[in-house]
Image 1: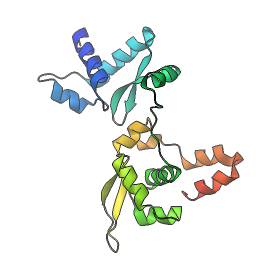
Image 2 (image 1 turned 180 degrees about the vertical axis):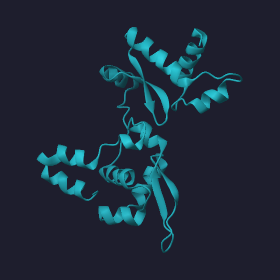
Image 3 (image 1 turned 180 degrees about the horizontal axis):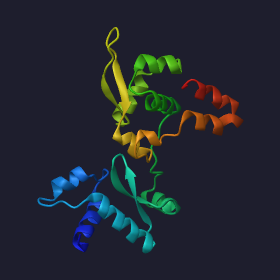
Length: 187
């Protein structure tokens, strides 16, 4: 693998708004596409050895350039915004339920939360954090919802298995009894 190929991959990482995948590389290179994993490994070493302000993260099944956390404040100032995804408490609760129980119907989400979730689900669909996975086989054949790659990307996860286990969350929140009740609803 030559330096030109590595530089092309670096340029693609910089320009790509979504995580760069091997599938995209196969489309971009007409003949003999490079192995993305090998290129990423070399670039990561280069960034680390040269003390760059960016890292390459494995996000949502691909790779993406991210600023190191210690430079976050300066990037925020440049962009004059937080750069964080803003969700209401209701949206966070609903998204958590979908993430841990997917695929799940609106009726089941509402049974856990105890309130109507139609508006919140619409918001999560618009933000491309959840998607319609299909229909349940039960009466009325309600829609089933699951998380998207956008969810993984927004929360810096490579795959759903990277979500903290509910037991781990419960242990962390043991000192906060009011939050423990909310966690118990997910079990």
